[in-house]
Length: 199
Image 1: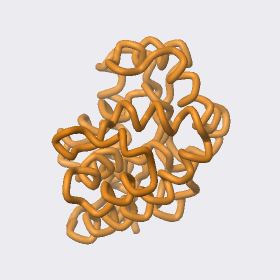
Image 2: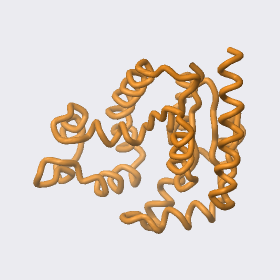
Image 3: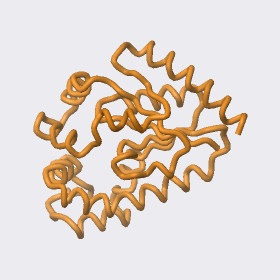
Image 4: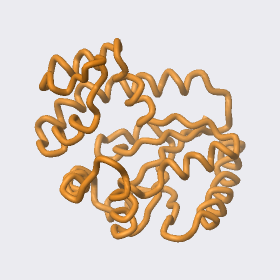
């Protein structure tokens, strides 16, 4: 099976692109969805986070205060590395387990920090979704819980746009309307199916 690693900066449109691939019948394995699931109450990963970090991250119902955690780790590179050391092995393991259950010509792994965490060995091809920095800012600042300072910290933690594009096997351009994105993804889907049939 060909594994396409879909990545891109915050606000570039990864979730939208994944939804379009899903509509075409392509299996999607999303690192963010898995990251969300493994920090639900009762999960070992959540207990490790509470042990490692400030107990104020624990809400009254035992769940994780995600907004507080994001602010906590993105303002401190050392704390972010500590969190990643807890989260990433569990996420990668779960992604591999999900992939092992699939029977399809190819799948999409949505991995926002694919390049930052040197996870290229997980995938066959790297698909970067790209848009202007201005477009990213416009999209992200409409999300609840993220202000300009937090966004600046997130940008600092991600590889540069130039480096991301230079690592890409394929690129989706997402500065235009949704119809353009649909058209690009239909074309890529045809290419990936052809590659899968030839391999």
